[in-house]
Image 1 (cartoon, helix red, strand yellow):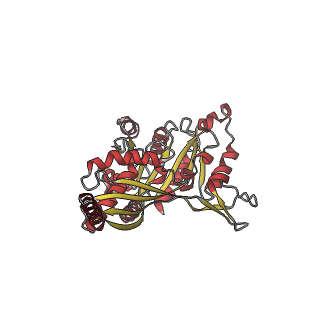
Image 2 (tube, rainbow over the protein chains, first blue to last red):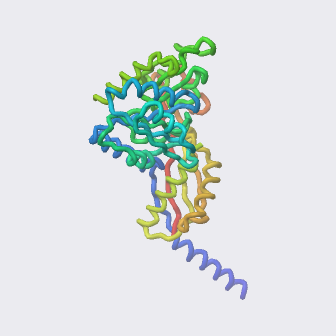
Image 3 (cartoon, rainbow over the protein chains, first blue to last red):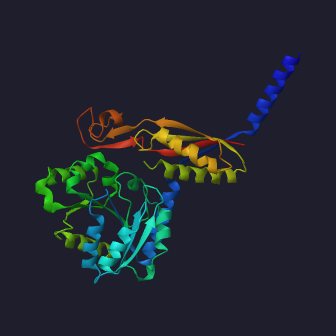
Length: 237
Length: 114
């Protein structure tokens, strides 16, 4: 008798608990909030007349050197600012400021591999947006994660450097499919590497037929004027 | 690679839903993860188990993952095929004019809460 009572009690306790637990259907993309926030930020920047470029690449592709060369060509034509995103340190922001004199701030992602729209918004709060035409966000060096998260940028650009190899569009398809412009950097050393420029362009076109490609060498300055002109055109739009 | 960031998004969404529905304890969260979404389930679960300890509403909640198989559509032969096995080129006709139909999702499907 005792045993039955115990079982009955347990059953009631079990079903009683189950009654309280409800299933709530959500059916929503994890990225939906960030995508909506990014769209809002893009609109706010448009209203303010600020063009935000999200610049992505692997570590060591020459992002900072490219930026210094480009900004020095542009700073008489546009009011430029830079946001440097890294996991740690402020070497890039200091380097940009010392070499160009433009507004430059460092964002720390605190271990995160990418920036999202909210982090970008916080960074923008540290800049004098009223006096900026072009803001360049140097994203965390990484070809995977930054491609997943919309930062709210007006356009996405990535740098692929020759030593990384011409097969990268095949290995990191998402990165190439979200970029409006691909800069192929370190073109001056192409002959020392097994890098086939035409093959690389074909692979980029496979991933993203609308992507523009500009070949540059941040070291010699070759092609950097074309990138600067591209930016001027985008800001004017 | 960005599983921790994804976990923070999920926690934020689930906390909002819990508040809207007046529930104080979340027992489980079910996700739908596409096969080619780049999110790695076991890493997501590791990050989840670490992050939920800091959230009283979610502490101890189980993360359940349902996989969505990746399927690619061919614009030329109108066929479909499994993406992971064949990639970008259609195994039926050899065309490169293909696009992903499904398998890229990272969705929160439902939660169990009381």
